[in-house]
Image (cartoon, rainbow, N blue to C red; front, side, top):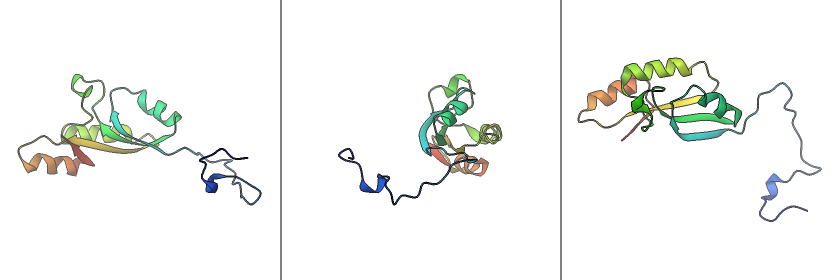
Length: 118
């Protein structure tokens, strides 16, 4: 008997081919779309919980990072991307979108910002 509300495509039965996960790293594939990068402990915790993608920003334990989920400026974006490159996780860093000119936005895009937060 299957619980009410379960999609029939999710039911495992005699015609289901079960694939072995031996020797593979399998995760749930969670995307965390609101990350404040303020602590080095965040990525191991996220990976242990099945998170495969983080979206947000920050520059580590700096006072200005505690509230916004952005990584300010080209230099900080480059440093954060370098630091995050060793982790087996997909990263999209957001740059600061509050500006009166286009040049700062373009500079952040060239430095690796995947988007902007206002």
